[in-house]
Length: 446
Image 1 (tube, rainbow, N blue to C red):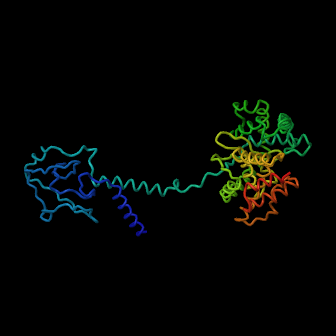
Image 2: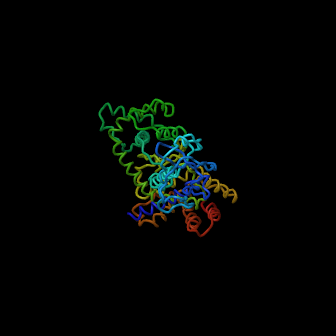
């Protein structure tokens, strides 16, 4: 401990010496080196004290008529022109025996008070700076911070309720078991709950990825905090009937469904974040290299909900500040275990900077070969590729029994299945180029 303190003191001395600017009058540029004693006038600063003050200009020697008594060992002594290594002898105090009035009448040739510079003031000033710098270096806020994650996770009450009511309307239409059995409610709540589902009879039939009204509703609810009622300002974005249905169903959903749903959503978020902490950087870099794209700097907003219709997740336009808005279903059996790693990076490829570029290159290759386009080939490619990279990434860092955690089975035609195995897999293995793999995939996946 003492050794560390000594080393710190030595370092501070060096830093202070390096940071301290020289006096103009110092011929060596060393602030601790002074000029000859007889070039600085004696100036009175008090009743019984005398000191020598450096000037910004060369000062002529003053002849004083005062008698000064100096200790014998200091007679003829001159200040050293090099910095003392240890301690500097204290300058002897001058003792006046006569003619003090002559000294008092001397012109004050000192620089203005605000410009006076002394060794002590420099030492104090720069010591403070060094200590502040050292404190900041040791501060946790300046430690190396992890890079910004691609995904911002959250779970919102109102968006979960919106998706749940849409799912209830679908289940009622196909006579499937409801998520909340109305028979378990009292008569008043039962009537309210059934009437709240009615406005969603048309909602579940619409495309949640492409329908502008549903995208606007989802984005508005994603930025709405949990409250007892929706603010009236959202009536325009939601529509009066949807807003009224949500407000009516909220107390019932909050009492009977939300506690368990929120717990499961939070558990899913914790699992997804754990996967991202270990594999996000590698997955991001690998997909950039394989797909020959660049991820945008803005993050993707991930809302974890209980259900998202027939899909395991959906991605569409996002609220301000995000590049995309993903709704991931924590209730889907396809999204358990290690699946969120593949799922989230597949959904991330839906952003225009990635999906648009891949679709354009597939269309260009299709036109070059004068073939008919294969429907949604770009989407199949963006399903297969993150899945294969996720398997390799997890296989390199974890021992996973993939039989226990299967990814959702891709619905591919036999021709598509064979094309991806024969043409695209060699590219993922580094055995062929992107251009050749895409050329063969477009030719054979039909």
